[in-house]
Length: 167
Image (spheres, helix red, strand yellow):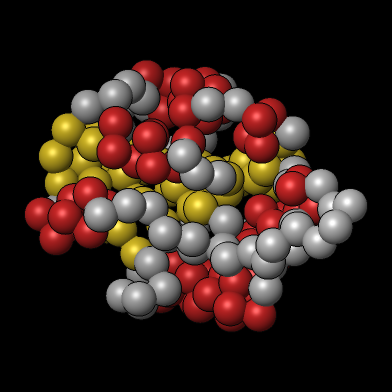
């Protein structure tokens, strides 16, 4: 069994004049939500073997908040996760080798596209919540029978969908 954890970055502030979108920091709500999501992940035993994080500031700050509770190890930062599409996220998942779990910290619409494409079924409540969108600091927990190198749309099972409103 393998698992994919998809974590959308927490709430960020608007870009100030002259600031690149890439450099937008989390706002206070985002920092609080990231810490709360990390605590929820630790509580539920969601500790990924590997972490791929977008190199954009708001994604890195989200991981910093989550990592307080998770004691995150094996982290790789990726410029690609900022600029690619859901197919690029899927490619990243497939490159993890023998790891049994991976956390991607990234952006919408890629998170929502991948989060709705990968599960072929799942917890009905979680599927219903995810169908309503992928909020900031949202976490999809998707299980697969085979290795992560063979992850494909429709082959996963959505075990849980956590977000700041339900943790």
